[in-house]
Image 1 (cartoon, rainbow, N blue to C red):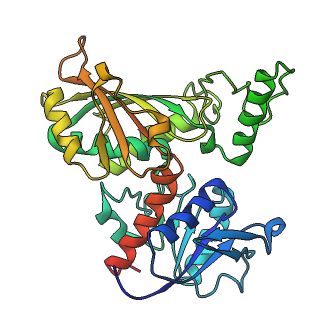
Image 2 (cartoon, rainbow, N blue to C red; image 1 turned 45 degrees about the vertical axis):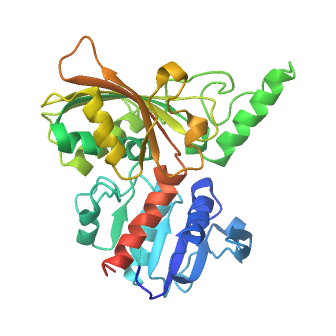
Length: 342
């Protein structure tokens, strides 16, 4: 990596993803001369962990954003819409983790292992994909390169940390109430009780659309990252499950060229940041708990679909806070440094 040091900002530093970004910047020894955690006014001066020390949060403003070389943003779409252009104008390259910029035509949507070259084309802002898209992309992209995608059906089982800290607290509180045989408090984050339940809704339904905004994101982002047209059929169903960390996904993949399960295992075993865990008779397959705390996507249950030609079923799991969000953002920042794309 380039030996130069950079002033790195983290917008949304007190959130679940923001704190993970700080953790990974320190863990990967990113060449930062200074890391500046940006947060809202209510968190001004609050200390957040960075490696073995603590650093104080700063409120973004005309003066405080000056001199930032790279900003990693994870503070919500409306905040990113307002502040990302201001950071760019002040001289920073922004790696954005919100949904706001992903589908802008002039903003590259980058998975470090899949389409790193897209980052070079940035005009100040690079988008990080949705965590559900990200976790599966490490598996889908190698299969697409080998045999070509014809159709993709995705079902996701998503951890509450994807919603944020308040969702984690809601699951914790409700689970405690259920186990204590106490009345369960009304849900505030989700439309239904999440403890000991599965909710077939992630994010919201827009008027006249039977698919949620999360499902629409996954379908559209997959096309953008892989450069797929409408001739490739994609469908998604996203559910929220009572898991703290780790998204699990079931994929049904039809390819143009026939791909055997054995060949798929070979391809995926060679893919960057993918680990094949596929001995189901011995109870060896990906689980959310196994994926938590890792940057790799775990994949297994690789088998033919008995009712559809040239089609495989797979099961995968990945950490939605790390590779699903924070790690990829840091990897993209590393691409900028390594290739002098700043």
